[in-house]
Length: 136
Image (cartoon, rainbow, N blue to C red):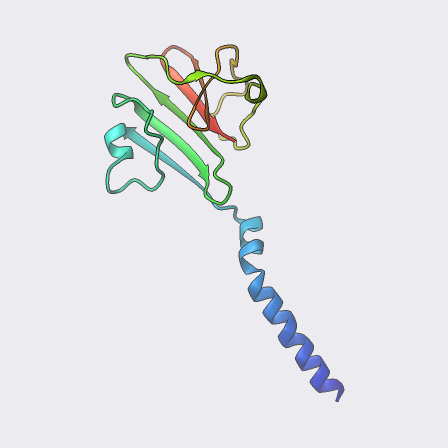
């Protein structure tokens, strides 16, 4: 009788482990993907694995993007040889937003004095012709 209870308990534990496997796998290896696209055409081509926002300029280059596919949080950097304003000033409730993700190419501090927002993204223009954007 004890043996049956033990076997039933082990089977139940195995089922629980199987059902929570995705959660455990996400804790060990979060669903975060990174991509580097040389041009906007590469980022929108058939081999692109992370979609870039439609507001990224056609002449953008060296587009780095990192995204958590589960939460939608993302960070992105790109260069633009002919920089133009993107987005509109963020409202006060969004001005203090900070990115949830980080990477070695992401700056340690951002100039948020001229922060703009577009389609849920926060955009900071800095370092010559570089844009840094994040989606909380």
